[in-house]
Length: 483
Ligand code: HEM
Image (cartoon, rainbow, N blue to C red; front, side, top):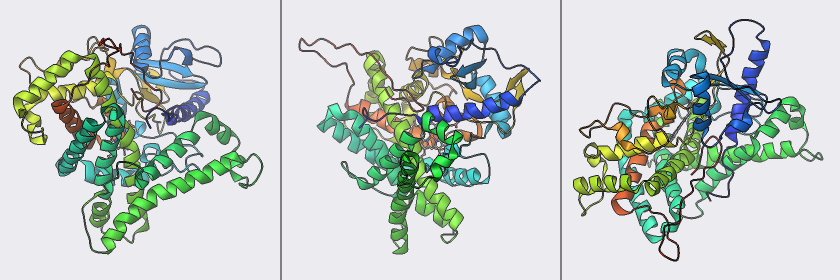
């Protein structure tokens, strides 16, 4: 399941759209402050050939040494301003968040079933409503209410790894799917061929296959193609759009109806959907009802691949750094012992594990560009014209994280072994569009990693002579990067 699906194409498309918006603003700008410095673009290709798409921080760090923390580059004909320092990112995304909280818009979102995805929504009332629904469920003070389900799913994951270790990526997927479906709908998916997981995956696959840069640019240029009747020869976009809309309908309605039916029979098991509807007290309010069902299915989409990918990066880090793994396991053994499995009450006594989690998020962020944003108006910063900005090599800033390519959890620990105040929120974005599920995600990742290390070790595979087979890390490209 992990290897044969192209992973993230939305990224390129969203980057392209964001950049297109920026380009238009740039083109319209005839005078005023200069754009930031940056590498000289090639004709047509721009700087695309220099960009390591899976590990963009390598390219951004190389550019930083010449051009500084704010860099202007062009990917094909799309300009981007890359922000390479946390200080600048905070200045723009947090201090000027009213300007930097928008998202680029496109006429393809609605026909391809993506206009209800909060990550693509313009900064406005609809986004605020969705964000409020998420915030009420996922804010830090609520996170403990999900611990029981996260622990239970972690134990099931351990059993599956024990039975079939070679399928560990699928077990991580199942862990994340089970946690999030349980939180959202109080739904316990089957390990194989689950109908709700199938609906969620079908929707993601359809959207992802269609919101690629090629079709997006064609449809933005010739929007009438979407108006052709579906039987018309060559009306591929129209047919793809109808498939996407059907998948979007299913993903919103089918799991939602399961909860609604339970509620109508008086069986009230708490979950995101039931709680949101009860809390807002307006089951008959069409706007609220739509927002809740949309927010629920998008939470699955936003969490499933990001969290699974982070666990795969963790396994890679353990394989490549056996000393770190041994130290983490020694900490668990010392605190938890060998007679039981870890639980959330152990967390304060396991600072090294938290440092491993933070370092995993820093070492190979799974959403290295963030989700591309847009500005409501163009801006000037440090004398430069900023039409639009994206996150650069902040997690690999050598000044802040020396030897940034090395996996060193110690960078998050004081000499006495206690955790520093660097909570490594960088992997979750900045400002008002920062990941709203980060506290839930962190708890899931923590219990999955700690439980795994308590029972298993990740090692290089051995050849027929019992020798280690070298590991050559490979990463997919896209918005969500997979190890
Ligand atoms: C390891 C796991 C995760 C990672 C690395 C991650 C990362 C991110 C990033 C980088 C963003 C974009 C922020 C921006 O636009 O600047 C984001 C947005 C978002 N995330 Fe997460 N995320 C994770 C898990 C989750 C979970 C578990 C949920 C929900 C339960 C979630 C829900 C969302 C939503 C709804 C948004 C859109 C927020 C908005 O546009 O206002 N994420 N996430």
